[in-house]
Image (cartoon, rainbow, N blue to C red; front, side, top):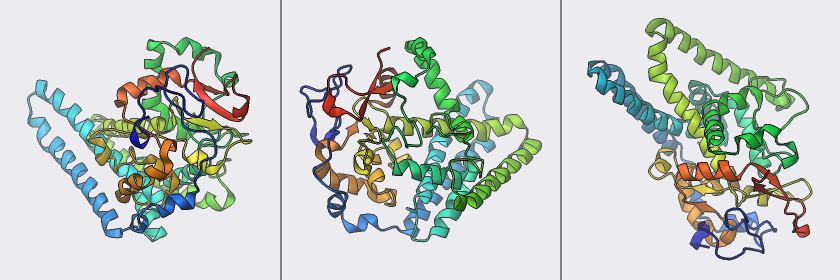
Length: 387
């Protein structure tokens, strides 16, 4: 095992546990020899301090570049000869999609009360930014909070909840091939986010229909329902504004300028979340074995290269984010370095190239099962792929 929890191919077993399919050493599933308070003591106290100035500076930074990209595209692209414009627009979509993903991450930080010391500021900024990206801010804030409270639990987690083999669709084995994986990944990255919001696809099963837009749905408690209405109003206002844009500029213009970048934002959001919580080395637990700390440690940091900074390091500081979700992102890298010596083998950074990692996880992480030959691991589930 490499220093700091980096994951190359395994040469030896870890806690007697090795993924037989890929020879990747597994995260320890036993109770860790440290507590959350001991982890916190290892982090410099200033890492927990939120700066209103720095947080707004990040917002203005991202909005400046989003405005710049919009200005260049709408002011100059029509002057470019058509063969070249076919290249210019995809470049705009990629750049705008990436920078707006950063905006999405800041709004996500508002939902964790990591933007400032003032909850009303966080909720106001988060509501505006997320609504502009067609995200129901409070609705997702509360379901995401429950995800953080139940990470790694196959019974109570809220998103990308793996299914036991017995619950996997019989058609899944027909997709367990290269064409099937391409199709599955395409649908997941393009439709996964709206399907999750509208129909709770890949989310925790409820006893009745669950939807992020329904204030009276099973996801929310009575005290949260008013804010779900506010989220819906935010989505309505954003949709109404888009309707007027379509009326004024045309549907094609709105799709080019806003629609395709938003599709890229949604794709990155799903990809980032999927790869943070899906890995052959990560354990999941049922209610007999799960506890909060082990669940929070059942996540993995990923390396997106230069996009780490564009995405405000939500990609490569995710483990610390799950341990201390109110910590602002601009202190998370320092905190991650501070906790590595304590976490040891419980910390995971996988620097596998993202496309390769995405393909591997889609191939190897199809369902979860307990190890047949490990009675002592009862209640601990691992990703597998053999039908």
